[in-house]
Length: 63
Image 1: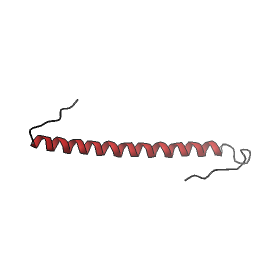
Image 2: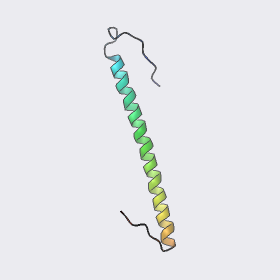
Image 3: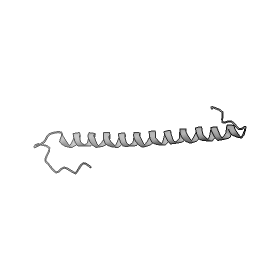
Image 4: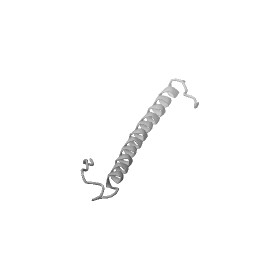
């Protein structure tokens, strides 16, 4: 986790902005990974349901 910075901008110009950009990049990456994991789990569940449905003469059609 990035800690808050209390350094004056004159001492370290642009540092706060760079930290904010880094924090946003980390948050966006985390969101992307969680979203992809959810999509993969959904795809696996749909394939399993389709496989089970085919055994019972049911079929899930592509939309």
